[in-house]
Image (cartoon, rainbow, N blue to C red; front, side):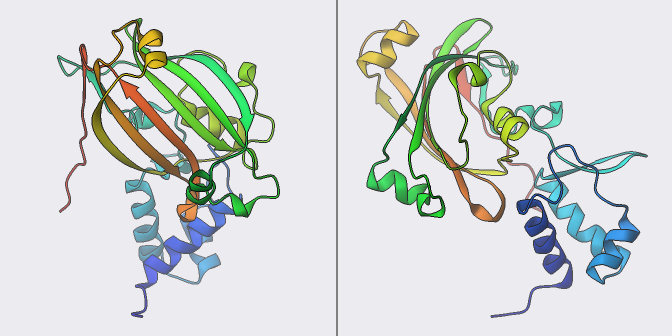
Length: 242
């Protein structure tokens, strides 16, 4: 296997340190010189590693202040994993309403996808919530979370409001979602989802299956979202690949 470029090695070591909790959400990293000495590299190599983590949204630089572990509550990251916009293209902060939260045993597929063998407690939380844009409910989220990562989750603790679930995971549990994998297709609304959205049973909706990951590609959440696109649309902007 080809040897990684030196800056890539430093990047991986930084990710390992983040995964181990050396720096938590919002923490400021040591200055460049200190980090470069710690990893035995030059400033240019260290900057190249940090730049890739910044591009991935894991770290953020603040002019004149330093480099910090990014927060999902920051405006620059608020919409990173929320792909719905109004029909006119304007983004709105979604509001959440919790419907239910219960502890359950996972299916074999869920246990495999969430790698629950990592944990002593291998139960899951099943969290159902609705989300609205401009006060109009447009979607239902069904999230499956490892109890091993979120041992004290409560309905009151999740709560309603504008804080995204990923921001809540980060602020309350130091679980930082840094990537997602999603599949999207159209499917008729199940009766329970239709009831929550005030639409007809079987109305075509977007069904989004998503798995969220933290550092070192460790899965932290499975989610199925049902979205009524009558007044909104799904939008993805991947940016330049150059």
